[in-house]
Image (cartoon, rainbow, N blue to C red; front, side, top):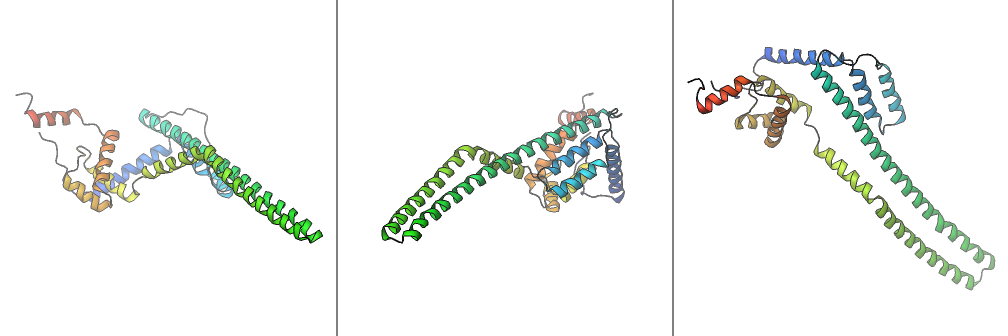
Length: 265
């Protein structure tokens, strides 16, 4: 017996779509009623609070207050769902910590730079204002010459201080800036697929769950429907099979029969 060929259309029947919607609603209800759901929601909101304005943070804190964390039994009758909820909570807590540390480092860098620039901009100005006082009092040409020389000396000093500040900033904070660039690049590379595209791929996946291997023609069609590249479609199915699919013993037997003939002969 050969495995079923995955050549059907993405959306075959309305009743299948209705069944998928019912299953999705049931899963959502199961997650929402899990004892760890308040923990998951709190961790999710804490991630959104990092770096947000104070008024928005108060609104998010109010949402947390509507879902009180219980100190009771935190396990359900579904061990697989328990593992998923616990792992997801831990990931959100770690993500919030990493995000807060990155923002704190950026704030420290900006604050230090602002202080240095403020001290430089105020220093030469005060000195320049003081150098004009002897000219106004004496009015002598020698005083003017002296003031001009002193002004030039102050200007050179200011340029040297700015250059020194730039060098110090590069030495002390180039690592932070580089890390921030890497983080932003990683987040950009790890951007999720559009929601509409993912729904189309999941629709195909649910219909062909017994054998989720799209043909080249299927991949071309899915790429057109989703607006993705064929490589993105192919990678999504590879990752999806690794995480959420395992061939049954019947499938193994069917594959072996197709390759080597029936084993019982």
